[in-house]
Length: 316
Image 1 (tube, helix red, strand yellow):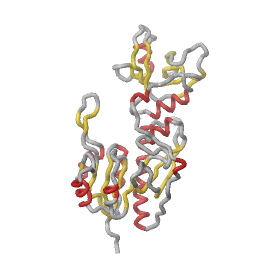
Image 2 (cartoon, one colour; image 1 turned 30 degrees about the vertical axis):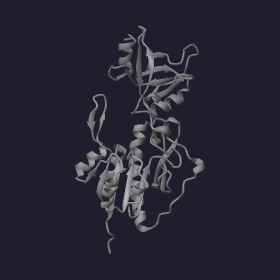
Image 3 (spheres, rainbow, N blue to C red; image 1 turned 90 degrees about the vertical axis):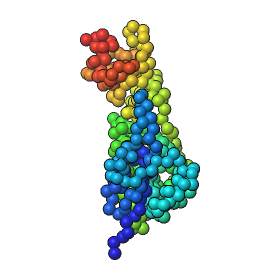
Image 4 (cartoon, rainbow, N blue to C red; image 1 turned 60 degrees about the horizontal axis):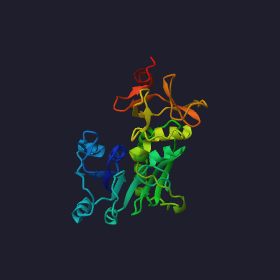
């Protein structure tokens, strides 16, 4: 006899969650009966109202959509309960769920987290892993509990971090991995072959939300640390420093992921913009020269190193 289709409610907001939702929608063992995502909010310089990537996908697929501010109202809890979900599937929803919500699914609330838990619990595990120079991260599928990413793990798988990976590139790779692993977990649960593994509280670390100011570069740090910062904060919020132009004006100079170059000349002060070498702008760090292919000076457009040299260093 064929197994009954599972009733699934999916909760997520950014592109990471949208990619995972696509895998869930393609799973033959269940039906997504509702999608929850954060309310539409103003975004960017124009503060235009934008909807989330998860909302865009759910509307495209014609799935019932809910966007509550929270679950403090009993009416929202009852509405969620009315879907009678077997599983609550959560990925980067952006809201801490109360116990009365976690108790709703008949079988289990599951969460997709982009780290090897218990490391990097919290909002920015991908970016923090790169910023800290980690060479391995991964995906954890866990049963949700009231604590922050503290539930027992059903499935965990590692992924290497290349020295040139940015947060944006790793984000996409992990999202696809997470989607595949979530479906794999659902299938294992159907077969009854899943063992839950409690997290080791002695190994817990946290990955708090990012701020724009964290992108400010301290050029008195080793160049490898600067490389980790720049790629960990790309594409958002980006990395920058206050650069003094030849005419004495100070502008915010945003730089993009590049590579560590040769040793810094002893007579050059860290933070000095030295010039262009092989298509890269050279900036002195503590020990070596950091090479960045593109920059964005102040309110000017993003440009390559050669254009910057011509327009701002008058060397062309």
